[in-house]
Length: 76
Figure 1 (cartoon, rainbow, N blue to C red):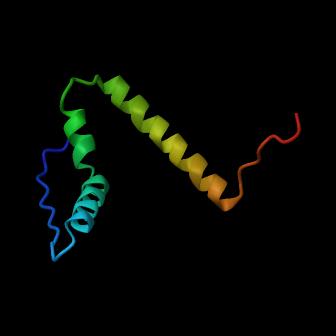
Figure 2: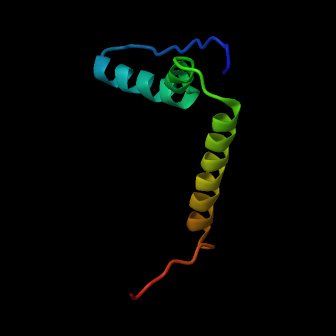
């Protein structure tokens, strides 16, 4: 779990809804919520490794599908 502090700035001119949308997107990209959720409960090292491996597999499958390298079953 990372103990880093995030400073996220959003400039509000006139449209508050747009600024809120930008803030949410920046928070999601930075992984602030994910880090907070991760710190709520204890996660054993084996479970951390398993989650990391599953995330890597999913990422690779999505990358392969985007490149057209993944073959899918058709027909039945």
